Length: 474
Image (cartoon, rainbow, N blue to C red; front, top):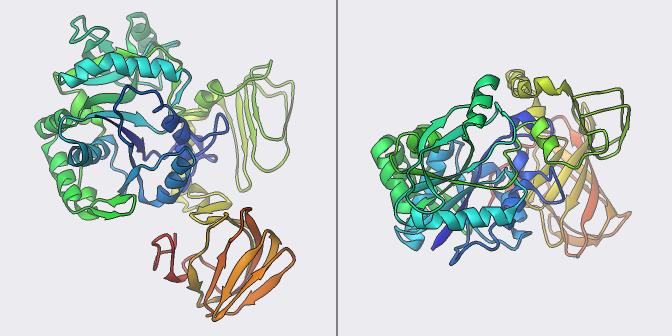
């Protein structure tokens, strides 16, 4: 049995302000209509069978968005919810333990990252088929891409001559991200880019974790033993998981094991880890610009220009990044793109809210967009998806006034229940129990005016919730 494992816990800090903590890059449609996660799920089509439903390891805070996006692809996976990110080795350990429980110790794990761009999915399927015999025999197989340029943002793999199976090479060594001169040398020597994708038996990766990272495996085993299942969510025990070392699978196992093997992947590939990388996988105009949204560019070359909410006009730019979102603008030359992470670190030190979320905040029932606010009031636009409903809740510090502008909303206010169409409005006093529901087939949009001395999102007392969030503020 082949069990796909999708690692969906990255933060994508180098793509701020598009990528935020609440909605990181793998959950964004950056290079097409589908998100990077949905593109990853689509690659599971055509895998050599039998193939199980995937296991997805993601952050607790992203669970509803991940579930919604995969449901849109016709997928109904188990979501293993990390209490906090601890890097790839603990995530893979949790997935391997759950896969053994469900499918037996000798099931094969195909580990994919949710934030990669792979131009040729058929090439990936071919590479996986090539790797299967070696993985079944006990090798820990990774996939390497022949480099097209001396890239300093990727690690490299040097392959040895010995071959455990046709088309498969033993790994001689893994190479950390090099400087430009070393990258050119590795490219000339035939080294491969390290993609961070793997194929191995579940029992073999657990054996190697036990040999090379016993403390990490013990913590994950304890977390898995105390896991709680809630529908399609699996919550490992938080306390032992947080005590687990935060190591990558490369460091914990692949660089130390004698069983590492590599298969070349003959496809354009990117981890979309920077704006130049994003530009490389995006459509370009005749001047080499990637223009997304309402962009007017005159005499601009080789620039990434993206407008999310208004006109972006650029003149005379070359090798630049300009990103406009409703609450933040980023301007930088390509040569400084790796310093976006340092910028995000500074935002964190200043405790700026822009590090966490944009103006629009996603919820399992839809979203809200904070349009305007000042002392004593705040205006939001709520979008409630068809068939969805907010929690039954009350507020201790604020009143709300709702005006329906699209669709038909079913309103609960204390003991009343009634429908409101476009133009209908209702006042919700402080302390009143209330709920919005969308019984129709089109999204409901409501303008909400909040009034009160305190308007924080934590002024929510949930009394009943269809998404299991009673007592939570997410």
